[in-house]
Amino acid sequence: MSQFILTRLFTLMAGPAHGDFSQGNKVPLFLVFMAFMVSVQSQELMTWNQIAKAVLLQSPSFARARAEQHTAEAMLRIQKGEYYPELNLGISATQTEQGPREVYLGAESILQPGQALGYHSAGVDLSYTLFDWGNRSRKKKALLKVQAGKREALVVVKRRVLEDAFNAYTGMLTSGELVELLEEERQLLERRLDLTGKLVDRGIQPAVDIYRVRFELRNLRVEILREKAFLESSRGYLAVMMGLDFTHTFQLAGFEMPEDSLVLSPVNTNGQPLIKELMANLQAARLEAQIAWWQNIPTLNLNTYYQRSNQRFKEVYGNLGQNWNTGISLSLYVPLLDKGVRRSRMENRALVERIAATDLHTEQQRIGQRIHEVEAQLKSHWSVYDLVQRNLEDYETILTFEQEAYEAGRRDFTGYMQAWQFYSSARRSVLTAKQDLLVTFFQYELLMGRWDGIGDF
Image (cartoon, rainbow, N blue to C red; front, side, top):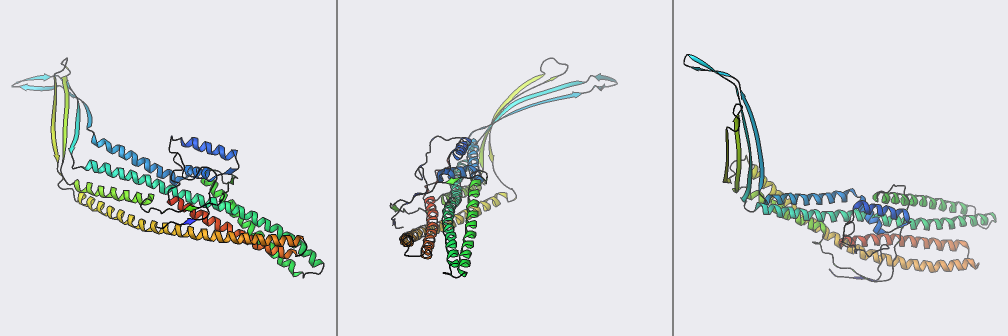
């Protein structure tokens, strides 16, 4: 994929360069959150870095993905126990009582008294699987792949959460600037309405001109109300994502767009976390299919035991008998008939492997298309932004000329107001183009993995 150069580089927020996140000592989550809350209360402006960390701290989907990663790590630790012998301790105690009975010896009978018999035993059993055709090793490799997949899944969720938060962040910034612009336009329209009324009173303009200006002013006020509602909605949405009350008021640090250059590097499709996750899932599915097949082969187990027991009668002081025994054995487990369970398991694992391969191929195509789409949109949005920025510069020149002419008495206020409306429309186009450009650029940075390090508390 060819590289291309953009002639202006913009930064997204104040603070450290994106992607420059420490991987050193971990900090407890509650300490990070408390530090964030203190920073929110102690300053008015919030940078994108602060927002991103706070959103990840409060995201349920990110917390779930982290828990699934820890679960995979725990399963791997459990599986390691299969490489060690299994030791069991068995203890038993039996107490029996027998009542008196009459025993006949020829013509005579003898009454035997009742008796109690106690039996106690204790023993240990040690077992170990000597040979299982490598299934334990395959299980370990499969769990390692699952663990790697969960690790990549965490990055996938992180990117989705950050993209959602960044859209709200840029939307709030754009709405804030747009509200300020509309308020300026409202003040000029109110001034125009006042001047129009004076001209109508003098008979210079028809009375219908007042209604036209009032109509424009009402429409503008409606637009201001809608934009303010969207601004408050974005602020509340972002506040809830950060774990704050939706009524919490805060401001966002803006972004600068200095003159510079940017070289876009090709994005590696197979390096995307979702593709790496699906690759790991496919490899784990293949290992599980192999395990299901090798489970049809006999396994060899080693067993050894030691047991000690004693028994005594109630009438006898001391033990009537004590003994101990020990032994070692090799057992061969040969699966014969299991009502088709093993065959069904093999077929199921084979289907899981095929599904995993299909998912991988599908996502490789989708992400490849997504990468080309983002790069094409980034080129287009930058070109659009450059054009509307030039238009704004031209309209600024026209507005300056009209303002000077109006102040000098060479032009009326209507010409100045018309020039200002063209200028306002150009500024709106710049705000919209800037938002589209920033959102697309952030998507590109996510694809490049430059934000994957944030949130590793």
